[in-house]
Every structure is written in structure tokens, then in C-alpha cells.
Image (cartoon, rainbow, N blue to C red; front, top):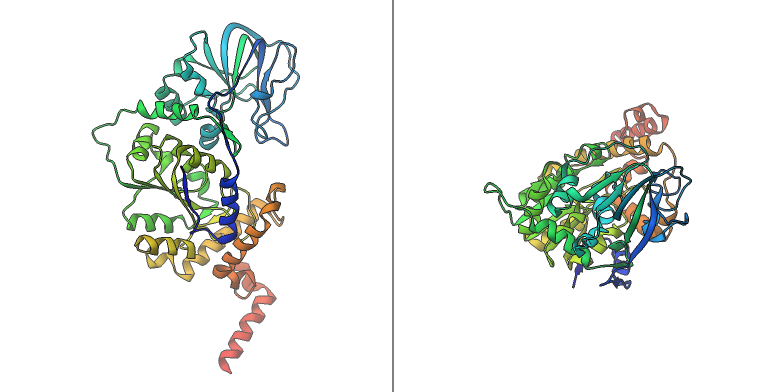
Length: 425
């Protein structure tokens, strides 16, 4: 049974997360499989309103097969002409997304059928965008190699009709249902890892984003967390620099895994059941996909609000991480030392806030970002904003300048004159 520690989250956010875990989730021991003759697999065609686009499977009569969709991500058919025909029986696997988090929780979740050892299957088929040419490399290819399915994969980028298509049910229906058969896929990958003599096995590891190039322009204060965990005996790992087999070795060998929220803790699908996970929250809203991972692996989880929120933002950020009151309580309860004092200074936090404000302006200009589905979390956003005010209230209330051009604005000049007169008085 999974165990969740909510005590290091802000109260309203903790209550919202607990409601997710309290919702019933169906465990499907025998997931469904759709079978159809002369069915066509459609590659991805971008479509507004969907995270990825249109695509999936249509039957011989041209009707869309709902089981081939990922709701809100990949759905619905589109017109197509003259598909290729192949006299083969294949298993439809879906969109091979080039994003590690989505790859783990969506792209490979139909592969539970591979372990059914159906000898009638010729190939397992993924699709790309229409016409896309992309070599599958790195940890993506390593996953398939370790599963021992690479030689049976086919990756298409144009509509293709097959003699028979099997569409296995998704292994995870977010916060609704899952099949334990999916965990056997990740166990099979992990069991095929061959540890090398020079691989160490640290007891505590922390997955950092501080060297993830795509995130550096929108995520600030990450050095604070690196320093905090390093001082407290964790081995700092940068997942984008660690081959998959070694990363799995680290995860399975550790007593404690700590990670910033987002895609990184999805890697706990490779974990042993019941391991300890500490999630450093980057956002005001918790990651609902991670609740499925934690539940399936029966993890012992502590969620920790280590973010300093200001405005509502998308999942791309910007974010500020820091030694918050929640992280301080976590440190105190575990006998941990705080980060070095240089990360706690007003000057350091100001630099983070300046970079945050620049990034926010670049991403959203002067618009207010609010996704439709954010509405039920309004109280959490207000709670987060008040937490951010404790750090940056003097800048938000225009009591102190923080951008260079502020020094030429009349408002701040008046503030300066008032302070000087007060000192003289």
C-alpha cells in the first residue's frame, strides 16, 4: 500500500492532493484488446485542442477505434488516401513521443501485450508525425533494447493498413484505472540491466534539473537544492547525462530517491515496490500522473513544497526553487543541515526573482496565464501567492526596485526620496 506524507505541503495543496489519492482507482487484471482485420494505423497530424494531435486506428469501414486514443493527447481520425498495405499481424502501440515523461506513462503502456508472448504477432508498431524522419536513439532505444523488443518494432510516418491489427488497452488511465501487467514491462527492463564493475550503489540519490539545458532559462534556484542534498549525503545525478541502464541500477539500489517534480519521478516505474521517494514540488499543483506511479509501485512518498510561487504559470515555468518553510521543516524532522548561507541571502533571492520576472515577461508578455482546468485550484494558487509574498512582497508591492529601468521611473524615485528624508529626519 502506498504511503503519502502530506505534512511538508502547504495545507490547501495537501488537501487537494489527498483528494486525488482518496478517489477510487480500478485495478484491471485482464485489460482489453481490440482486434480488427484490414485496419489502418494513422500517424500523428497536429490538431488544435489536443496536446499532440489526431491519429490512431480506423477499422476496415473507416470508423475510429476509441481504444487507440489517449484522451486529450492523441484522438480522432482524419481523411487519408492510398495507405500502404502489409500482409502482417501487428500490435498497435501508439505515438512514439519524443518526451521522456510522456514516453513512460503513455507511449509504452500498451507494451504489456508483448509479455503475453503472442507468437502470431509479426511486429509492434509505433507512429511518428506524418512524414517525420527521426532516428530513435539514447534512452528511448535502450528501453526497447532492454525489453528485447527492438528487432520486432516498426515505426511508421504514413497511413498503413495491416492484415490484422491488435490494439491493447492503455496500461494507465490517469487517476482512473491501471493494470498490474504494465509493471511487469518495467520489471523486465530492469531485470535485463547488467551492472558494470565500476558502478557504485549510493544509498541516497537526488535527481537534479540544474544542468538540464532546456530548463535553465525558466528554472531558478536549483543550485540551492543541489547544495542542500549534497550536504546531507545524497549523490547528485543529472538524468539527461545518465544512461538508462545505469539510472535503473541507481534507483533500484537506493534506499531513498529524491527528485524534483515533473517527469523525473516517473522513472520510479523502474523502482522496487515500496521504495522511498521524496518529491521536491516545482509547482502549485501536484502532478496527477505521478499519483498513478506512486500508487502502482506502492511507494512511500513525501511531497515537499520547495517552490516559491508568484504568478500562475504553465508547466514550462518559470519556477523559483528555494529553502522554503516546508523544506526547512522537512530538514529539521530528518536532522538535515540547511543549504549554505549564500543561498539564503536576500541578494541571491533577488537575483532569482529578477530572472523569474524576465522569463515570465518573455513567456507570457503581459497576459495572465490561466488554463481552464486550473479553476478548481484557485485556493491553491492564492495560497501559493501568499507564500511567494513572504519572499518577494517588497518587489510585488513596488516598495523596492528590482529591474534596472525601475531606477528611472517616477514611482521609485519618490520612494527613494522618502527614504532619504526619513533618514535625515
